[in-house]
Every structure is written in structure tokens, then in C-alpha cells.
Length: 173
Image 1 (cartoon, rainbow, N blue to C red):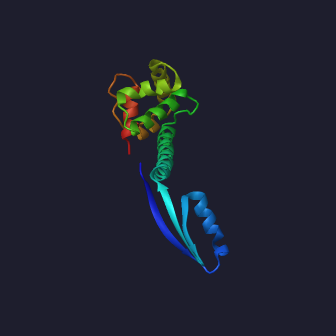
Image 2: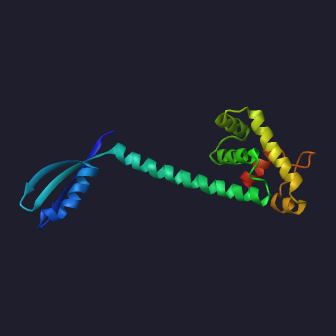
């Protein structure tokens, strides 16, 4: 990447009064003093484009973290509405799977990706999610489930499958 250069003039009656500005410029840029005449200083600043990209990347990372926190909060509230116990390990895996879906992961791969993250088998992650869903359906009053889980359960079971559950929560607005 190429460096960009800027030039500016600093004009002051008392150069000592501008010392803070000069110190800031020296600390935060690659700077070359081009000329100094009486009360005028001319500076040339080299801006490295990688510095600009790093600053942009930091802002994007903070935005992504804020977005993830918002999604976690949203999905946690949905699980709380269904009265899913926070002590269930499957709940955490469900939250992680929902985040992966929101990042564009394929539905078929979310359990595999959560398993890789935790160093566990895909089946153990899926089983923990199933247990969390089943426990919720067994312990939560039917009226609360009907109010907060409006999707049709397509299997002959009382509780939705892991994929049905993830799809509902992901698509629910």
C-alpha cells in the first residue's frame, strides 16, 4: 500500500502555546518538518493507508461485537420467554447456533461448527440441544409454549426437533 501525504501550516504568535498540538502530531503521525520561519511552521505528514485500514477494522470489530451482544440478548429473551433454563448446556449451544445462523452459516453446519468450537462431537452438541428443548417442553406450562412458540411441530413428538426450533427462533421477528 502506498502512503498518502498531507501538508499543513501552523501559524501562531507563540509557538510554545501550540506545543500540545505539535506533541500530538508528533506522537500520532509520521511527520517531517519542512520549514520554520518566524511564527510559521510547515509540516508534511505521511499517512500510512494501513493505519487508516487498522482504524476502520477496529471500528468494524466493535460494531460486530455490539451486534453479537444484541443478538445474544434478543435470542436469550426468546429462550427466557419459553422458560428454558439457563443452567442447561444445550441452551448455550442453541445461542451459539443462532449466532452462526445470523452470520450466514448453513443450517446443516451449525451443530458441526459449535462442536468444533467446544472440541466435542456434533452428536453430543445436538443431544444437549435436544435435552434442553425437551426439558423446556416438559417443564413449561402449555399456555406459555403456545404463546411463545407459534410454529407447527411437524414431527409426531411433543417437542420440536433441533432444526425446527433453531429455524423458528432464527426466523422469528
